[in-house]
Image (cartoon, rainbow, N blue to C red; front, side):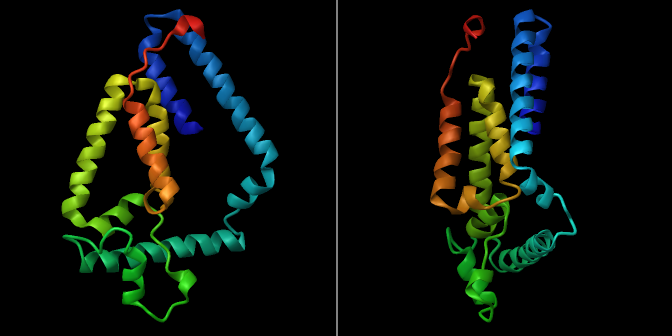
Amino acid sequence: VAVLIIIQLIKYFKQSIKNTETLRLLFVQLVYYFLLTLVLVVSLLPVFAARFDIGNRLEIQSVDMRVSQYKEFSEVFSKNYWLGVGPGAYTMALYQNDPTKHVRDYQPVHNIYLLMLAETGIVFFLFGFVTILFLIRKILQNNINFAPVVVVLMTAGLFDHWLGSLYTGMILWWLVLVLGLVFVKPEIDKI
């Protein structure tokens, strides 16, 4: 929600000099964001409290697991940096590096960019990265209102792998990019 608010503020700051209706729209959106955040925090307070308690046993385990995943990524990537291990074969590469672990311990790195780099290698990762940057540039040119959604997904990709490793995540990722390419002329007077 904070990322959305920052992007909306930047977007409307540029437009607010020209139009007072834009300021009203910005205020309405900020009120909605605030209310949404308030409802989520109040209704899920135990979840938020546990997540931000660094001394919590599960949080310590989660941080340790993520640190070990970055080490495992460097081992997998260093052996296959040009062409990668193959799409969807990251956990198999983890198994080949250390077959003594329990099956639940073979987890993809919780970062879609590093996961894609390890699976596709430098060559195809750069091609895919340039393609996605091209699409995002087109989204910003054609449909600036969709930019916050794209930025939130890209930010989420830094902290989890489901956008690049699970079918539903990949569908969501590409659906958002394609919907962002659709040009929609905003009609402020109807809002």
